[in-house]
Image (cartoon, rainbow, N blue to C red; front, top):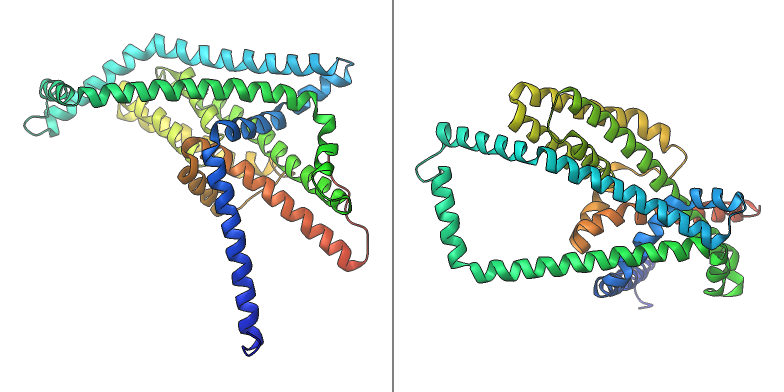
Length: 354
């Protein structure tokens, strides 16, 4: 090894460090995947805590006991989520038959003008019955698997809500917990990094929620003006989809345009597309710079890579968690950069934000 030139030895050392870091990251990801029923609720609870902490702090500042304040905050979440679910379900019940009938009519028109032999609705129905008879057992196992997934999702949601309660109530002990996990000499740095990471996630969640609400209201108003069925449900879909940057907005907007095309025709679909595009342009050029200017802002390429990595690891849940986790990582990197820059200039390190 000593006979090798210095550049080669440095290259080998960096390769060893990168391989070690990649190995540790792979082991951590595999452990999280294997323990996803515990890891996913914990991460979702952290996101919920970051989003709900301002309300909790206002209640505590109003001299509400901590446990009661955390309980009231979680109850508010249940009311908001329950109200959103009710709006979506009511919209689907009121206009679901109309949407299905419109889609059926569009399918009949396509089959009549462009369909080949065997593509009529009657042929498709008979083929579907034949396939169902052949693969009935597979379909039944798929239904059972789907029921188990729904049960697991509900259990994870309940666990996440309980964790939000405990995270809010015991948030004053978080600093002591972080310091207890590291040597005494690294306590200040660990606290500063944790504060910066959580602040980045808190800012991201708060900004995303504000932007999602504005997007949902604007698109819902536009769809109501165009008399598109299920406008309230589509607006709720836009709000939820906004938490998955870029891809969520694209999917929810595409669904709205397709519903408008099926029910109201090509011209109204173009108007709906114009509404969706206008709202997305407003978000990208006005809302994002204004709302999230004081939080961690990441390049779109980094966001897309994070979404792709999250989807490959944990599907939709991974896409939901990927960007906040990357935001936390970016916050930690910025904290380290500021500290090392301050140390190199001979001044004290920056104080950690709350």
